[in-house]
Image (cartoon, rainbow, N blue to C red; front, side, top):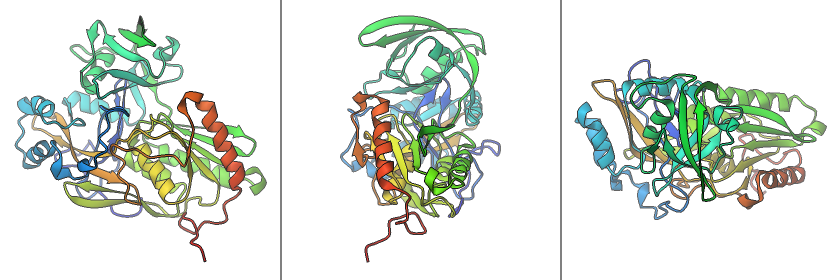
Length: 421
């Protein structure tokens, strides 16, 4: 990646290689996101989702790290004043709704999920502002999918234990069977679910699952759809490879690309930045504050700036996915179609304690190239499509937009619009 390089976060072990996380949702044991390469300056992170669209703070006061109730926690971690025995309680009392505590084993498991492999039932969950746990994504072919669990279902119990009000990380432990005794593939787990006011219980068996980060297909004649479900390792290169194949086609068969980020909970920030590099010829992707110090992320040079591009977004587009969508919109590279994104743009930094446990605390907020703060407000599409019309409606609008754009010959070498003469 061009631009500045970044170092491992404070206190992280050599093998952890975690730096900046812009993840939002946890998948039956998968907390999304982080930097994947060891950089050279301290760098921040984010974690799990605990707010819904009706609970967002849009006052703007949260832009200042110093005004956050989480400041005391992050400063205490920075000074090394947090004892392992006190860490979990300190996180819960901090007022930092994005803070998380992981045991050493949980954090090691977290690292494995960044390769896209995990033991679970194949659901991503998030916590709303009211503390309810909602299924945000279901992995195709997984145990939950086979039991007809669907996005939007409310998760009320796991093995008879109520989950409302629990941190997402606790819910993940229960889904994986890690609450007391670890349970591997084949072990049963009972889920209490609610949909449209009706309750049901299902018993699933955990499995070793591999999350497919990228799928590529034909949406319409000459139009390629690239679906990115989350930013795990290798996703950026997969998207770049897909774009190289698109660029190799003759113009007549190159009607455009639909980059589908709907339901994408975020993930590895460097993978999101590499994905941006597939569509930009270098330049700014985002800026972020780390305890008052502003830093920047840059795309690599050489991306495709000519193929017409539409990005599909919705209320499930979060964190690193919002960062990518906002960058492509601000740089004039893509037309955004769909509904407003979730609005999770805070930055968390991980700190390793003396017993190997890890605490992530909020240290700042990130912004799009134009300076827009995503946290609390989300990214608005250029063309809004009612989410209630179903996923097909947004795809149809995307195809209409692409047919109207034609092959892009009005962009400069860096992917932005040519200024008027």
